[in-house]
Image (cartoon, rainbow, N blue to C red):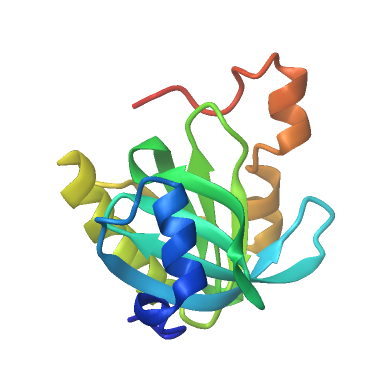
Length: 154
């Protein structure tokens, strides 16, 4: 499901290489809306490889805003009615996204997590976006907790 054709994109491949992911398989790439801590939507490209999740700028795949090791995922929260999901990252801040293809992303992430860690990725369904937003660990809250915030390792 490489919607953005990153397999053949030199900038995306260079970004993967700079994050030690050049030997990884691209499992998914598509445009999503990242929801920031103030609730504002920002367009991003998400790239999922066999071991990592990349948050890239949608118009420049060489600009990587964040790279998360799949093994660092603690769990996912989903709000199906709102087509939103959140990546909860162990000892780091979380990420909230919106896309009509959220169910496909969740399926790919579950499979990739299982392959990378030999464990099932927990997926928690929340009722609405307010519940999703309330359960987010922000960059500021991680910083205020001394950098060791976030969820404990499973």
